[in-house]
Amino acid sequence: MFENTKPQSNAIGGFALLALIYHSTARNIRKSHGNPLIGLIMSMMQSIVMITAFFFMFSILGMRGSAVRGDFLIYIMSGIFLFLTHTKAMGAVAGAEGPTSAMMQHAPMNTIIAISAAALSALYTELLALGVILLIYHIAVTPIEIDNWIGLFGMLLLAWFSGVAVGMVFFAAKPWVPGLVGIATTVYSRANMIASGKMFLANTMPGYLLAMFDWNPLFHCIDQARGFAFINYNPHFSSIEYPIYVSLTLIMVGLMGEFYTRKHTSLSWSAKR
Image (tube, rainbow, N blue to C red; front, side, top):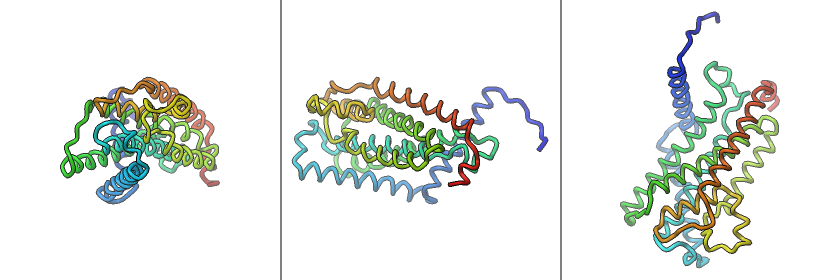
């Protein structure tokens, strides 16, 4: 109770924070399923089911001609994986342990560590599932040809970052109106099934329809990702800067809201729920 605490340098404090984030991330990964292999398989199956469903939907509706010239499955996967990464990052951050959680009673733990761990665990799981699926597709079906791997991976990270930013806003509001935030996260995830534009190319959309999608940072990420994936597609109606600016704005709003919530929160809030 009265033990002495030694002052730490900034470097030591930074390494201690990174160690806490690492252990919290590992805990979050194992929390979803005790066996990490089963957890990876479940994440892969979710992606495979969505890819298969969209493949047959495009084929049955005769929409394959509207896709970009190239590997049709890469076209589908470029939308599906960015959508899943964005949505899971948003859900993980929005559902992270808040200031009234029992874990926050341990002195080194704080909400920033919980948020970082939730975001990194979602990214780790999706990257692992993506790598395994692409490896299987490359070996068993056909060699994968990507025009710009670095740009495509950057768009995946930007989709993840924008999901973290949206999740931060939900996270800050959750202690005040948990029921409403739960509904809002579900509605946002379902709306992005269409609003993400993963089934369309921005270059082929009429202006009145484009206006219904270009507010969404994920729409820009997916369209730009297809520009990096295919040599014969050059996106004209989306940008990289827009999701960056929107994400940074939402991060700042979420951090201010989280700081205000943390200063006014009470343990009795969690007891009532």
